[in-house]
Structure formats: structure tokens, C-alpha cells
Length: 268
Ligand SMILES: [Zn+2]
Image 1 (tube, rainbow, N blue to C red):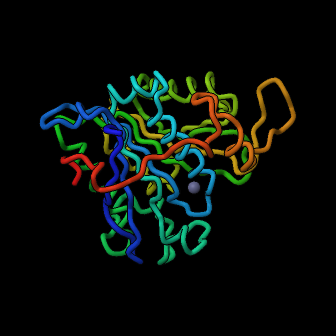
Image 2: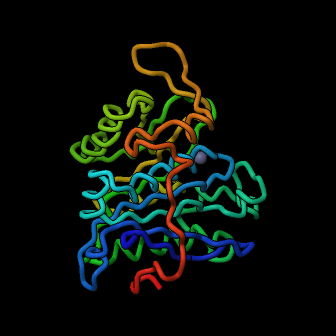
């Protein structure tokens, strides 16, 4: 597989790996190539396990032979950091890092030794932003919500009405295409308590051509529009049911063996 690369972007306080996946056509990684980047992060809040199921689904789709996945790889570079808080996940924390910080409140000024994984990801994003050959099109941080149903998004509020309206298009499209995604639960805010989140920080840093969202998915269930019954998310449904795009159960999908051989020269 010449369009999937894995590298270690950094490490946590307890020296666990901060993985970074790159999924794109090798042509986009040529020296001097212009890149349109979609950056996705997950599990900054370690207890929000649905974040990993969604992230896994995104990865499975992007590396598949589905025609849309092939086109996406041709035009875009996907950068995915599936686990921003590996210490918290290992320790069974619900929301915090090893040192008791909610990492999603420290994007403004992450410390390389107190919040090293956040620091590493932020450095990479800022570096991309400053690279004239790179256009950071989307940043999506995947979370899970303990009380809301369905999937939904948080976005930013901008003074520029046209930018604000453009930002609403992606969640509207998701709502039209995913039966468990709700546009009516999607909201846009700029309250002080969320100022240190990735979505807010990057929404302020990046220019009007970038879109930053928090994607929330319900811990429990979704309600299909026009009905009232909640459809629970279950492990069996995720693992055993055929993936609508790939046409086969995820448990039988073959995952690439990840060896150094498969790392492109640009990423070694
Ligand atoms: Zn969260």
C-alpha cells in the first residue's frame, strides 16, 4: 500500500507513542508538491471511546478501494493523529492527562513537557500553516458526548457572515448523508470556557479558507429523522455489520502490516 504512512510525531509524558498517519497518493508527497490537508485528531479525552470507533471508520474508508476514497487520496492529504492522550487512555482516565490536565483547554500555550502530545500536534499544524505550499483545509477533532443523541458538530462564530455560512455547509452535508448525524444539534459558539480547545484556537489562527470543527458522537444512540425510537450503538453492530461503503464486516478487513519498509522516504 503506497498511500498509507505511519510515523511517530512525539511521545507522551510516560513515553507512549504519539502516532501520526498520513493517507494520500504518493504524488502529493513529492518534493515541492502543493498539499491540501485534512487534519483529524481523536481521543484527546480518553474516556470518549466512540471517538476511536469513528476514527477507525474514517481510516478504514480512506485506505479502501472505494472510488470516493481513491478520489479523496488523489486530491487531499489526510493527516490523522488517532490518540492525542495515550497516557490517559492507558490509565483509564475519563477526561484528563497523566498530570491532571484537560488537554483540550491548553491549545493556546501547550508546554512541551506538561502537554507534549498536544505541543507536538500544534507545532505540526502551525508549521503547515506557515508553509506556502500547504493549505490546511479542514481540522476535525473527534469527541463523544455522554448525554446527547446522534452525531453533531461544534463550530466557530465569525464576524464575517459569509465565512460563518460557509462553515455551516459541511455539517449540513453530513446531515444529508449520514442517518445518525444531526444538523439541528450542531451549534456554533465562542464562549470563554471553550477558548483553549483545538477547534477554537485553530479557528482563530487559520484564515478564512480553513474549516475547524469538533465532531461529537453519542455514547449511546441515534434517532433516525421522522422516528422516535433510539437506535443504540453496539460493538456488534460496529464489528459485525457490513460497512456500507466497503461491503464487508470490519473484522474481516485486512489491515496493512505496519513496517518501516512502508514509510515513504519523506517520512522516515
Ligand atoms: Zn471530549
